[in-house]
Amino acid sequence: MTIELIVELLTDVFFTTMIILLPILGASLILGIVISLFQAATSIQEMTLTFVPKIIITSVMVIIMLPFIADKLISLTVRFFNHFSTVLH
Image (cartoon, rainbow, N blue to C red):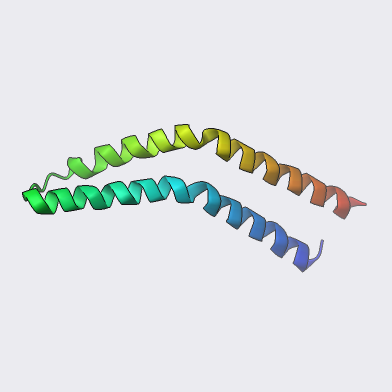
């Protein structure tokens, strides 16, 4: 196993992780900004007002993105097994 192969595999892992997490984190970020603007405009400083909607939107996004996440993880696993079979021969 060469350094180049290890770097390629780790690059695939990091890229796949970012592709999977960006939509979920992006939705939470946008909701957080909207809630912060609402809190600033109304002077409501309730701490649970930010946490509960973020947990809900994160859960909904994970459920919506589940087929996409499964597809990405399956393709990453297939690439890993293909690389491992070439390394073993």
